[in-house]
Amino acid sequence: MKNGRLAIIMLGPPGAGKGTQARMIGEALGFPHVSTGDMLRESLKNGTELGKKAKAFMESGGLVPDDLVDAIVAERLAREDCNRGFILDGYPRTIPQARFLEALFEKSGTRILSIGVEVGDDVLIRRLSSRWTCPTCGKMFNAASDPGKAGGQCDECGTVLVQRKDDTAEVIAERLHVYHTKTKPLVRHYQEQGSYSEINGERAVEEIFGSIMHKIMNHE
Image (cartoon, rainbow, N blue to C red; front, side):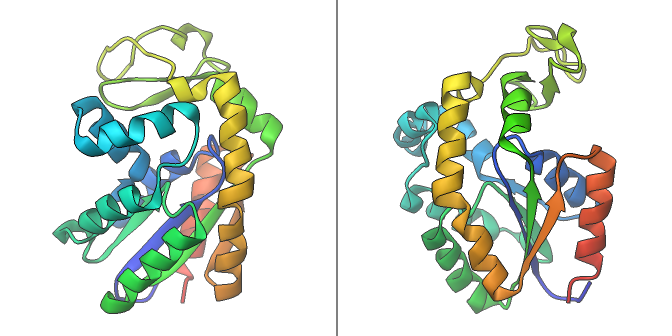
């Protein structure tokens, strides 16, 4: 891996495991994991102006407008902990967002490596509809592999787990539709730039992580 600031952009459908991999990569490289979803949910929880504007879009499964997301991303990436590099999870989701990022990176000489974690729709629907989340620490659990977690407690902090509104069957279908129509073109965009690598996301977490780290360490 070359010296200089590196932006690792995680791509893939909702439920592909991008967040889990982004956290693991961040710990391995000492890079911050920048999740726009977490930032938006925090704004919603705290009742900020951004949160109020984003609420209707998030609860329906639609995309939050570019100008709202662009503003919080630009602010976050300007912080000192992003000086060496960072992992972007949940952004960009559209071509205009990707172009906004590229204009931002051109000024700082930041290199881009986009990693697509690919998983079939049938697998995603099973995963997401079984997902339970800790509202306190954000850790996720899967009731399909551990039925006791449905409505149970977080093993990290003891908080009662909840199922997010955007993990219901109807909203999952809408989220996948949005991904295929609005976000999938990003794959072609980064392929054309020669900065895209695809990873099979239907394997064990550690196997996926190993494949991603190999791509990063060999990235020119």
